[in-house]
Image 1: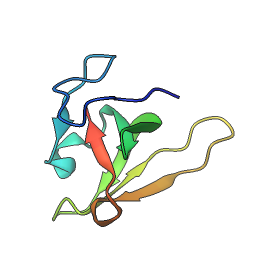
Image 2: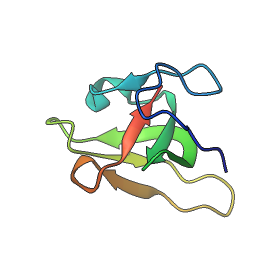
Image 3: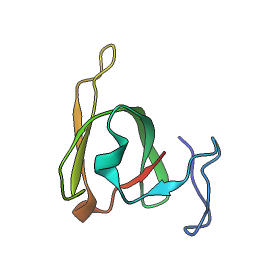
Length: 77
């Protein structure tokens, strides 16, 4: 698991930037971060119109997962 040591990083180690427009990212590959820690990477399956939640599609043995902005999740794409 990667850790971003500076919370104001402009890019992740893979070159992705933080995004606030979650609803515009449907179908794209993105990274999910929480408290400076990489949580998941996957394809955004769906997002709410108000950008408050999104779902990362399941892959292999992983199930579809929900992430919400209120908890502090960040999306980098």
